[in-house]
Length: 413
Image 1 (spheres, rainbow, N blue to C red):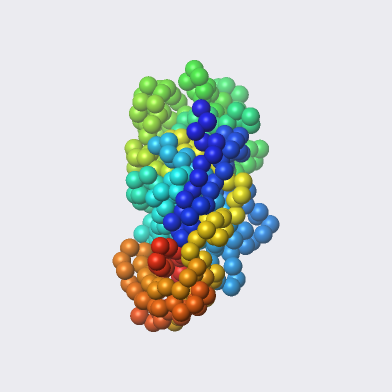
Image 2 (image 1 turned 30 degrees about the horizontal axis):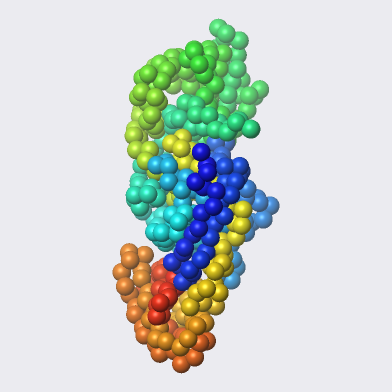
């Protein structure tokens, strides 16, 4: 089934490359990256972050020189619609993510920038790669404590298996208390069963995974975001035909309905004992952390809907620019400084002297600068005046006869 994926050639437009290639031989056997379901602070892109190194964010590293978190790897993403993309998280600066992706045949290479400013009251905002669509599908973080949802559990050697259960919000703590059948749990039991921060402390195993029987030996004490401790006890599970879950919060009966196949998500406030939001939009590939953090900047994938992520074995992000340069009539040697303020320097090699045009586009795709130069030799170093540009991330396009190159520059005020 993976025969068509054995050898694929990437013909990249970026940096004027004519013969860049991804060798996907054996891709079916490459290790797959998964989100963590013990914490929201670890996604598939940053699954192997070195937490002992404060500069390592998993998908990239913080630079004290540029003050950017710059990407270091290229990944292969299978989207929820079944399409394969080469993708990198290029950087994050000033709360703006920049990513690059293309089809595996090199077509439709795209660089996108997303500001998290509009979503920083949420935990994450979402992006569909195939549709090029940003989605705001979470309620405000402070309004909910738990979410009834479907999520995968990982079995070594088997992979992901979807279960339906409950995950809790960041800042919420849960004690899972087990008592003999017929006995009632109380708050003093948390001395024996202490509260924990893992978001799957409630999880899915309060019911039988196959028969749908709810275990009366389990209940939960949940410390919500306001510091109130709530007793949560499950009473009934309607199975995948309706996705109905009945439970009590501090002795008051309530219920939520996820729908057939447990397809939807319900965000719930324990303090107010009410459903905050129902989400039925699952057509997304990437979830970007929306809040400011110096500890972790997770980027997650939509595993439940079939998204998959693998790291390209030649994973260095410079793979975008390092293969096939000898075949290009235009080689960009350096772009500095980056971030830039008043001016930008571009050094490049041309196979022959020719005219050069520099174009700079803002994050909205608007042309903000255009300069033309006459090249008198094959080596060129150009100085671009940036004094008329606003602060932000710009795509720099370099055009010469029969060749083009692209790069990203952050302009500071």
